Length: 402
Image 1 (cartoon, rainbow, N blue to C red):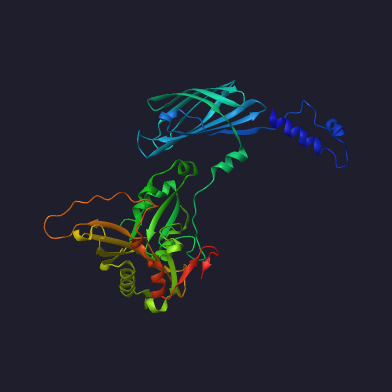
Image 2: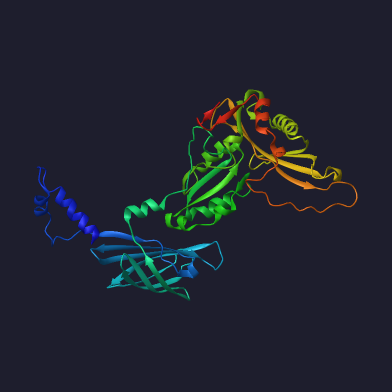
């Protein structure tokens, strides 16, 4: 009824282009018996289904206070405790305050029956009833449910998806991180096609979320060697069912990234990985007061892992050893032709071990937090790398290289 009052007030305010007073406006309002148009409202917080694990959306079409149509959209774990989701959408028959209908689930094709009773409780609504999926019946009691307008519902949907099909550079997306949005029916065959390819697939992105079931599209996240990323993106665009493919957020943190001229670090048209790994290992070893013990490139992601050793300062007489691991990514600074490279260096991961001869101490380290850290771990390593490679650092305030 509140929406109808607003509607009538709006009609009154625009009934005439000539200057009029408020009393005149009231006389020119629409007749009281003129029906308002249908209104769509949503409930998104109905709880109690599937042990409280269901994501429920009830859409109602109303004429005034009367519900004329309703659709129940429920997404839920296909098995108890499982990440695999199933979903059903039931168009409900309205009989007074009773909503009922039948359908089948989207994935497992199980029969579904729904019977709900709705009751207005002031500004909110209460729902009671039963939902049967396959052989399992769930009783539902959900109180204090507020409804939303179409505009409010769409605004609350939001989107965390960020795929840049053609980024101007790699300042906001990561050169090794690729996202593929693909139709659900094509996703399985696409993932199968990645077997044997030099790519790393994010396991969590293989789980089909409720948002994906509702959109009919899934986003698969991958890591690819930056030197092969453009070729991979170009090829993947042509795969059946692919809606969008491009770069997304990944390992790169601009605060720990430098940019430098590519010419001295190329062998033909490829990055000279051996030269770069040696130079980076030497400068990090000096900055961290350590000795380089190993370097290794990952053929799938293009990441470089560097390992170091240094004496622990915890009870020096024990002669404990700190093993320090650092990851790095080197890439052109943007897709396509460029004369610049960027180099990202991770924060060090440090573990302390007893490598002395004879009997050894078994050491347990407290879990690290974002607030904790030994100043010796890094010791200005990124600044040292920038100096060694004659590189620029990122200016976060100006969002540009300095």
